[in-house]
Amino acid sequence: MPIVVRIDVELAKRKLSVGEFAEKVGLTPANVAVLKNGRAKAVRFSTLEAMCRVLDCQPGDLLEWVPDGDE
Figure 1 (tube, rainbow, N blue to C red):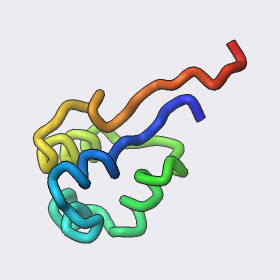
Figure 2: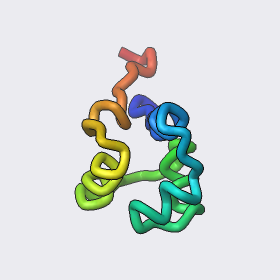
Figure 3: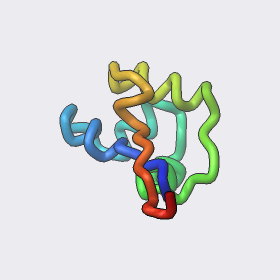
Figure 4: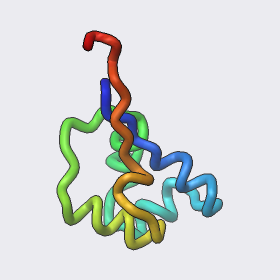
């Protein structure tokens, strides 16, 4: 998958658990795990905004495009 989710990096920097993060963002821990593990097919802008607000970061800190080698 060419889009890599870096939520785990930002959580580690802030020493936040998935459970704490999920509660602050308004998601279930299971949905955070889906995002964190790269299994999500889409992210709502409102969810992305909440994650950035909680982590005090930019969307580019959470999402990274990586070429998959087919190009």
